[in-house]
Every structure is written in C-alpha cells, then in structure tokens.
Amino acid sequence: MRLYGLFIKNCLIAQMEFRGNFMMSLIVESVYLLAKLLYVLVVFRTDLHVDGIPPEGLLLFIGMHTVMTGIYVGVFFTNFMKIPEYIKDGSLDLMLTKPVSLQFMASLRYVDLALPIPDILVGFVMIGIGWHAMDIPLTFLQLAGFGLLLFIGVIITYCLMIIPALLSFWFVQTGSVSEIAHSVWDANNFPMAIYPAWVRRIGTFVIPLFLITNFGPMFLLGQLNWLYGGLALTASLVLFAVVRLLWNQAVKGYSSASS
Amino acid sequence: MNRRKLYTAVFSMGVQHSMEYRVHFFLGLIGAMFPILVQYFIWTAVYQHSGQDALFSYSYGQIIMYTILAGLVSKLIATQFEHQIADDIKNGGLNKYLIKPISYFGYRLISFFGQKAIYYGITVMLLVGIIWFAASGGVLKVEAVRLVLFAITLWGALLLNFLIAYCICASAFYLHEISYFFVITSLLVNILSGGMFPLEIFGDSVVKALQYTPFPYTIYFPVNVLSGKTEVAAMYQGLLIQCGWIVLFFLLSRFAWHVSMKKYSAVGG
Image 1 (cartoon, each protein chain N blue to C red):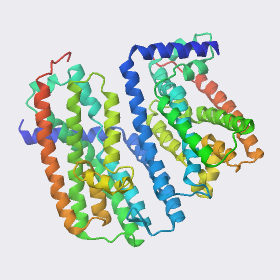
Image 2 (cartoon, rainbow over the protein chains, first blue to last red):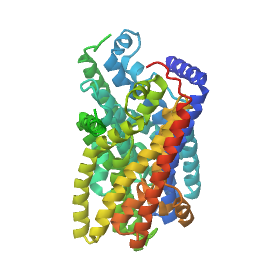
Image 3 (cartoon, rainbow over the protein chains, first blue to last red):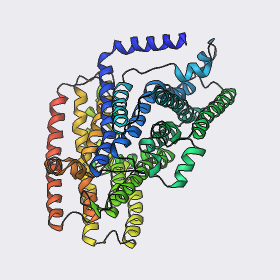
C-alpha cells in the first residue's frame, strides 16, 4: 500500500513536470465526455423511460458508467496499454527481478491523475442528480451498499480489461482486441434492461460486464436483491483468482523477447 | 518516370499498405459494430417507449438505417495519416519529399485513396447487402438516381475529409505536442458531421447553423441522400455545396501549407 502511494506521488511529480500535457489530457477526456453526454441529450430530449425509470433515474446509470470510466482511464488504462510493450521490448525482464509482485508492478505502476478528473466529477454530479430526483434516502446502508458495488465494479473492470493485455503474452499485436474491448465497454452506458434477455444473460453470467456499472444503480433503485449482490461479490473474487492464475500461466510461457 | 506512372505506384503502395494489416482491419470492423449495436438497442427502447412514429423527423426504420450507414461511412472516410504527417514535420521526414519530384500533397492524397480503395470495395459490398435488406423490409425505396448520387457524394466526402484533416495537419508546423490535438479535432469533426447521432438531436437551429459549415457534407449529407430523407432538389444543391467546400478547402490547404512551409526548418531527416 505504501509502495502504491509512492507510485502515485511519483506519477504526480512526473505529470506536473509537463503541465501543458496535463491540461491537454484534461481537455481530451472532456471532449470524450462531451461525446458521452450526447446520449444524455438524447435521453432527455426523447423523455426515455426504461423499465419505468425516468430520465433522471437513468442519470444514475450513465453517471456510474462515467465514474467507472474515469477510474479505468486513471488507474488501469495506461498500465494495460504498456504491458504489450514491456513484453515486446523485453523490459519485463527487469521487473521480474524486482522484489515486488510482478503483476502488481506491471498492471498498477502508473496512475494518470489528469484523465479521470472530468469523468469522476461529472459522473458523481449525475449520480447526485439522479439520487436526489429519485428520492432515494441518503442512509448509511445505501451509501455502503453503493460503495461496495462500486468497489466490486472496479475489481471486475480490472479483471476484464486486462485480458487483451494478457493475450499479448501469446500474440504480439493485440491492439485491435483492446479496441474491441473498449467499444464493448460503452455498452454499459445504459441500464441493461434496454438489451434483449440473451444479451443480458451473456453480459451478466458469461462476461460479467453489466455487473460493473448496472448493479450499483439497481441497488439504489431497489431492483437488486441480496442474492445478486452476493453473486456479484463472489463473481468478482472468482474472476480475480482466475486472472491471477492466467497471469502466472502467461509469465511461465514468457520467453523474454530482446534486451 | 512520368507522372501517371509515379502516382500509380503511390496508389498501389497505398493499397498494399492497407492490406498489410488485414486481421487488424477486420477486427476494426467488428469493433465498429458494437457502438452501432448499442445505439440500435437505445433507439429501439426510445421508439418503443415514446410510441410515436417519428422522432427528430426520423421514423424508427430511418434512424436505424442512419445509425448503420453513418457508422460505415465514418469508418470509411476516417483519416489516419495525421500522426505520420506530424511525425514527418517534427522529425524531418518531410525533407525527402521536398527534394523529390513529387508533391507532398499529391503523394498523401493518392496514397490515401489507395489505402481506402479496398475499404471502399468492402463498404460497397456491405452497403449492397444493407440496401437489399432495407428495401425488402420496406424501409428504403431504391432509386437509381440516389444510388448514383450517393456514390458520388461518398467520394466527395472522402476528398473533403482528407482536405479538412490536411489543413488541420498544417498546425503541426506550429505546435510541438500534437497527438492530443488530433484526438480532439477528429472526435469533434465526427460529432459535427453527424457520425454519432443524426444532427437533428441538437435542435433545428444547430442543424441550420451547421449547414454553413463543411462538416455535414462528410457523413450526414451522403447518408441522407441514400436514405431518401433529402429532397431531390436539395440533393443537387447539396452536391454543389459539397463541391464548393472541396474547392475552398483545397485552396485553403494549399495556402496554409505554403505559409507554414516557410517556417519549416528541416530538422533531422
């Protein structure tokens, strides 16, 4: 944990060195956010109700997705993009020798502090508006449940989005796989109720994509029973164990490309 | 080597370049499918809920058509050479073009068309399938004149988008760190061109205002020519305006590059 704190500090120092780039990152992510807000525009202009949830309630879902996108681009994205590079140029060798868990080092070393700012800010504002508009009581239980589901979402995000990077242990060029992963990611922007049942089943039980940002708002709206909450927790733990195993398996096959 | 031979060689280089990453290209197509699918489900939910026949002046069939076609067209006209040009300017790769008997503009344009030739073919095949499917479902009335005009405007869109991007590239002479800049401009241009949603969602006044910009003539206009939303008279008028923008941006890009080139100091090489 202390080491992770040091990583964050180090990244902050590095980013502050190039403040212009920091500002540019902010602007880039804001433009992406703007593109996402177009969906909000459509929702409000058409007064879309999904499963009886009014537009303001849908903000909970869109807001949660935006927050999660912020966390993903801030904490994971840079690292996952770098893993294929480490493998290609052999800099993973050096990491192997360090007295820290290799997976921790390779997948969490960098933290981008600029990219998540607009997403997390606007995301929480949207959640706030939705929370208020849907008359959801602001109790400890609600907050704790929402926080826990957010945390579960982060773990599942880590497990799912690292898969393209893991594939690069076996295949060199995986850029297009992560491109697909990113476009699937945005399917979460809306409540899963808009998708047909078979898509929902795949997204919940096969690739638990909808667990990431659908369960939090569903919990707040009282659509989620404890069974599903428990299922989400178990799924995230199992998934993490599987990714851990996969990682170990992948490293065993690593043949150290160059250097 | 005469000019024709030279540019044929550049064209075929472009074609070969695009075929270099076949798997990447096809995976890219799959990647482009997902946003279309997500939008399909969103629009389905929107129309089911509202119970109205038309929203933003589009019927359900038309909006799905628009989403699919806009996705395809924006993939087709997407430019990917900005980073190469910026790299050429920054690291001096431009030098070798300056001393060779070939214009950099011509080289980039022909190689861009070469790279897009295969994409164009595949897009046409997909379009034939979509048009056939939509026509048999009664969403689309196939009219020969619209098909011809669509094919023409699609080439126009390709050329116009190239010119817009080429103009934007001239800023690489003045800015040092440019990759972020291209991300922003390409996304903004895509939104304003109607690549994500039909422009009508922004409201009538915005649609009207955008008619005075070149952006709708890259995606929004060709798609609506095909889908039958644009009136016949407006089609020819639009085609003329598209040509006007192409000429204007051609002159603008020549001018911008001519001015910027004076600043070029040919570092490295």
